[in-house]
Length: 113
Image (cartoon, helix red, strand yellow):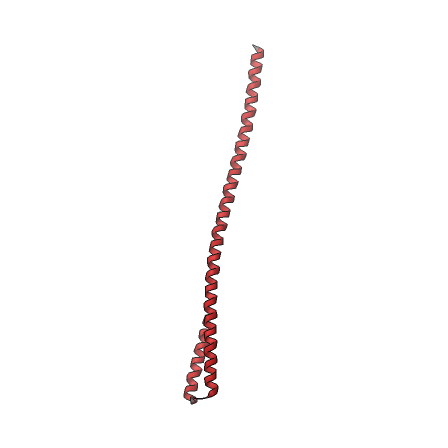
């Protein structure tokens, strides 16, 4: 009878050790799962930020192209007005109008930048 009790006690102790080991393994697995979930969320956030940055880059590129077009147009118009001014076809009244147009184009050029 004592031998059976000793065996049961030993079996019970062994089961308690196994249960404790399984609980530790369970806790470690849950911690690992939580870490993986956090990492996945972090990567999803980076993916979202990356898409937002790509959209912003595309928008800035379009704005830059628009500005370059406006600059080219203003430069061509200024060159044309300067050509008209140097040929001195219109007298002082036309000269004043050319100055106003030139200033207007310079203002547009500044706005484009």
